[in-house]
Image 1 (tube, rainbow, N blue to C red):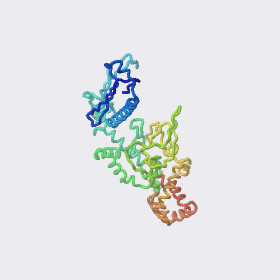
Image 2 (cartoon, rainbow, N blue to C red; image 1 turned 135 degrees about the horizontal axis):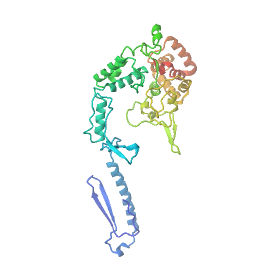
Image 3 (spheres, helix red, strand yellow; image 1 turned 180 degrees about the vertical axis):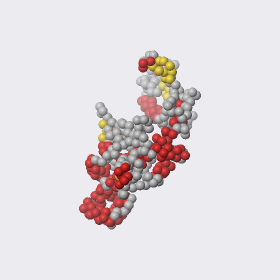
Image 4 (cartoon, rainbow, N blue to C red; image 1 turned 135 degrees about the vertical axis):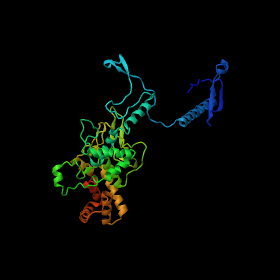
Length: 403
């Protein structure tokens, strides 16, 4: 605590103490009410005044060091406290509380009762609720989860309303398959990786989207709801950005920690967010670590159908517009990464033009070019350089679509 020093001080007593933590503490005793007025009135000499200022500075440094030493890491978590009593309010009037409300679950779901009688804290209540939701006798939770996984891989779920399994939602296209996947999910110990493996190795997933000799199936099921072929689907905005960074060799795979902020913040009457081009390794991290500004969507990501983060979006829309082609061709981020892509190809393939083209196709499409593609790419490389070729590959349908 800072103490205002008078112009006159009776005595200066400096005592060195040990607080038990190995750090010495200088305690300065200034003045004493028991001193005589004559002694207290003696003026402080310049040497003593300088010593006081020095001790003040040392005390401030010691206080800062102690605060840093004993300051633990901050953890943002739910405090496990005793929940407050909640009562029914008559006609919503807080001045007329009625009977007490106790925790419970949906009465229409009767797979197993949820006992909240012995719960005393909010943490215990949450645990009971979680156990009730994930109980093996409750198939709904598993069905919802596997349906979302199916939706991710086929662009539409077995139930086409992933957030609505009620009367207002869609009916399953393959109800037996949905039930089987739910039980397999339970048998796999709720392992999402195991279910991904089951889905991606299935015959349904390994089909081609190209229509050949399926005229009868097309007449019966033109929308492919019964999955007689694969659905070609466009990469979502985050996957497109990450794929571009991976091909250019600039994807930062650092995991965990705080997210990156690809904008400049300006404090004003209303906060202003100006997005910047991701031109540093800190901004080349995977899109899952992107700091999302709800009030100011990212223009490039929004153009690629990234949903508004302020809204709940169970199923994303997938569009094909001219703005997307223009963004993938002319956005500064895409141009920058195309230059990095070209530099990587030249570095890894050497000076040979054919080798550069083959390496560029390998990185972008994970395959070698056909003879016709090689001839056309050679003409493009001669006129626009390897940068022009890389820019074209990042805009090809084969790059932005999973087929």
